[in-house]
Length: 154
Image 1 (tube, rainbow, N blue to C red):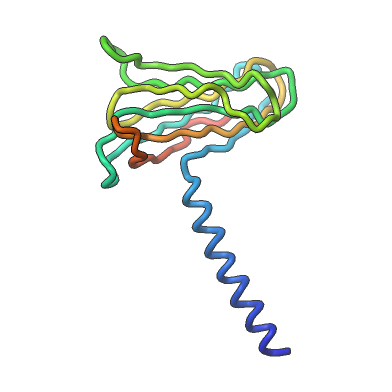
Image 2 (tube, one colour):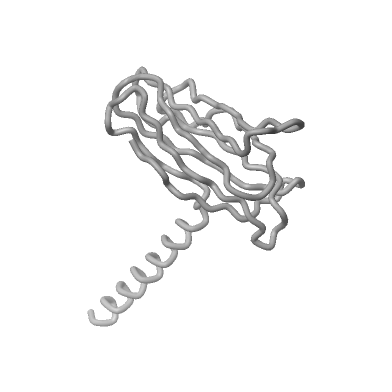
């Protein structure tokens, strides 16, 4: 009986560490919700793209999934910079189908390393939840350093 108890404790510890590891692997997703009920609610994040040893970032790609069945649709706007001549500084994407497993169309903002602004919005009053997938990548499409900071939650 005592050996079973020790084995159980060891397995719980191992699975706990595995859960922490799995959480860090999917670090390029940001879940959120609009809890104020306001139609004009906007959540604001800053995503930093940096060379983590996999290469210099070329772009940020992002898409959103609307997790709530409601009349409101969730969208994202990703941008960096204000005076772009050859690449688009901003890209917009909307998930038109609520509560499915599919994300909105993938958008890319090709502005190199640094801080990108990422806004998540919804189109009507009420509560809504979402999941944003985002990745910084090199010009060859290799995932590189990506971190996110929450700036505003509505």
